[in-house]
Image: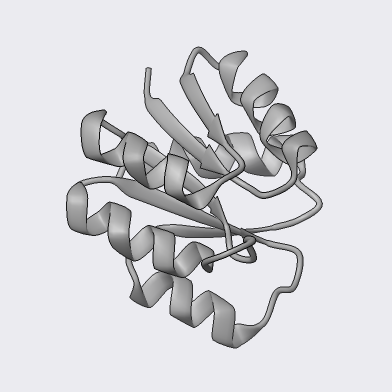
Length: 119
């Protein structure tokens, strides 16, 4: 199973994602602060990062770019509550493999995680 990093500035969101993906057998590391997630990327292997696009200090795109610099093989899913063509295009151009709209649908998240991990 996969090592998954989840970053969202809303604690309830990371708790929900951890519950959903832990039940699938994944190891899920949750963060609500951008710096903590990036520090984790310096020292630990990440198979998949699930990042909210709107965070406190940085955008999810900025965090994605930094994590991809550290771990180019890492896969990524960007979450957003504000879907636009521009944010989807930005997410994909910076290396996201998939895009997921909030509120999170359990089945959609499970299927997108499975799909991205098989790439």
